[in-house]
Image 1 (tube, helix red, strand yellow):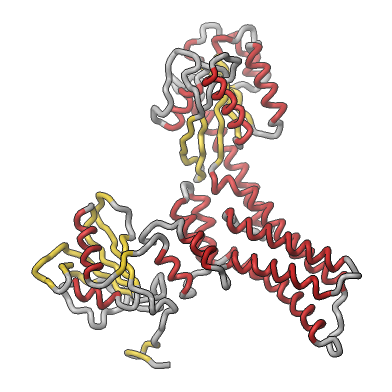
Image 2 (cartoon, rainbow, N blue to C red):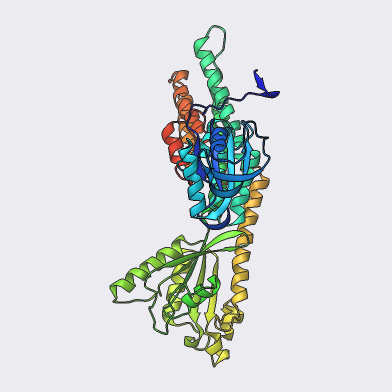
Length: 483
């Protein structure tokens, strides 16, 4: 192989594509902004706007200097660090140059314009990661893990993403399924093409092998369903009668005035949601309209959405104003609503809270509910009981995480995206068709190769093997510019 300075020459598959440029850090006021160039002319373009010659820059060694207008060193833009990466030892697999300039709006914009004037093309969303995929630096599941890592609100999802990015856990698991299908397909084709030399494989054995693949795929889908809350956030619905203190608790948990709070009943007319992070997991709190019979059309719509929120939530907080409790007896409306919720969501974790303890004059009126029925006293105004609510929520998260770890110990440590799940479900559907075909002795053996080919196509789309452009466009369009 030809070499330069004793280094093998690497020609990226994207070598004929234009050199692209974008800001890799968020736009806005900051100490440093990173402008990234990638492509065969990255060093040449950087050389036109940098104060020092870059004929053969040392790989991954920062160079201090100044950026100026193309070939106009007297028009200085900023003092920078320039960091070159030679192909293939870069994120994209191409020659890459990073320009670390001061942050803000004006300076990064001027540096980008200088790069563009020197011959670079502004990058579209996901262009750098797409080139990394095309040049074999990443598989498609790793590219999607980068997207997960960027958008992760809690550390659990970021850990899943980093694990796959480093160890290719998704691709490794699914490649095993793919190889099993290919092996069966090869046996069928060999028996059809060389009937005199290769005996037809026993149909029952083929069915069993395909069923094993289906079961592994189904197990992965089931595990992903159990971990979907890590990706979407654990949903907590705050329910109760109007003026029970739902919005006050909502604001207290968020440590900000997000929902409107007044002494008037029915202030919240719609669901309001916000996100916080507890125990390394994104938690989506949903403040709901008070649950009551009402002639107000707008409020009634809010009540309907509250019931829907309860159905969609992973955990429930039900609040009752302790000042309206008499002799350990809940108001009839609360008793009815709570019974309905527990009937429709019997397995859903539920914390029952008696609010406004700070203004309750007759403490004895609720002692039976607290000591015998598991109600927790709460005063958001004084803070008493708030720690109990937070601890209960963290316990729910810990319990959920334990179930995930048990699945991980079984050998499946994945949290698939909706696209990946869709491909996997479609693949199992094709495999089941192949099994049905093999079950019918009247059907020729070669009919089973058709659904097997379709199953492999789904896996190839999932892994990014000979994947159609429309699939790649769908994946990489979700990335921001600069990544």
